[in-house]
Image 1: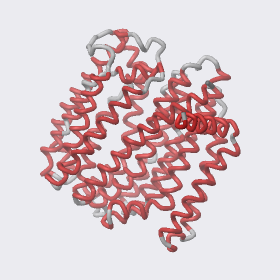
Image 2: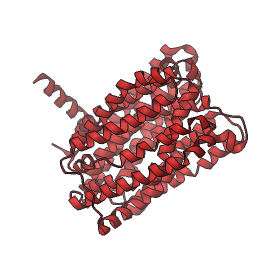
Image 3: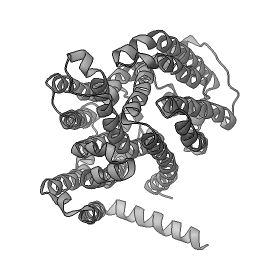
Image 4: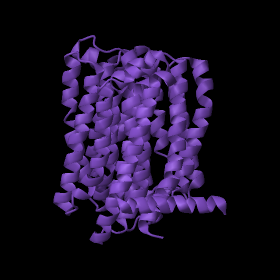
Length: 489
């Protein structure tokens, strides 16, 4: 079986599991958003922002080292990773508990101080996870990781409605987050092949730090990227002494942010798990590396256009239909968020290619460029502009970051930029046409016109990718024919 075919088949398997995971996440958000107010949903979003701050600022990506390193199967290395991971979890939990009161007052919700303290349970428990589910991915074995994520998603989705009906406020989301971590940690130990141990090995610890320090800086940048805009919306009134945004605005923005982020996270999780071992295995065979990188770029560009176009054209209508009229304000900016996440999706390809070559600095440098636009977000908030301006800042930030990532990959590692640019051009063209279609006022013709336009542009995007890239077309047809053979056997 060809490598490209293995990539596509592996992508189908991982993609199917991620569809389930993101689907359950979407259902949970709908349940919570329907049963609590937008303001309470905004407070619930603050929990994730508080937890993410320390997690991203302390992320050394130890689990990725177990996949990328040639000696990633070494037991002592894994045990050292467990020790470092647990230490990180306890430290983050302590810090969150101590600063909970300050954070609650910063966002204007002192009554929720107790809830912010309970958020400390999340990093504490996550630090006790078993890393075997990541280690086996170096051998393209994704079953254990899939079992962890799917099981946790199913369990917390089942308890979402009872908790929301019981609390009827932000506390429901808090206990859903805690329950998800508890289930995930338990299943990582059940799925593990090796015993869970801690070891302190100075040499291995030094290797982890050497591999992860650029990603540590990258974590700070990622926080600004993922949470900076919502942090500004939530605390902007107290930071700039203006009354531009409310917790309701934060809730509406968070709903639009989450619904556009879901597909992007799906693709990011699949591509990260699948492409890193595929590219790492040929990191010293440059011709094969380029060929596989080209295929990866084609795949992510195709999928990015397929998920961005529907949101650009029909996103506002979809949010109102699913979440209710209290979230209809999302229509004004959801197109910008869709394009932003599409750019971040396609950036997975050059980022993972750099990491497969042992370069974790590329992600750091490109995210420095991306985070620089956070200054623009602050200016927008301080001057009282609408949420659309904040979303637009994110889009242009991702565009700059993508250019930096692709350019540096070519300059430092001699990987031709055109291997990425060619497939990306098709995706960019489809998003541009979708944006032009919306600007011409197609929404005034009703939801049927939106659905028809969405379907036509998605099919055109798929057709363009398959026409201009024959190898992708052949491999897609091979996967389809093999799937049909399996079903008829």
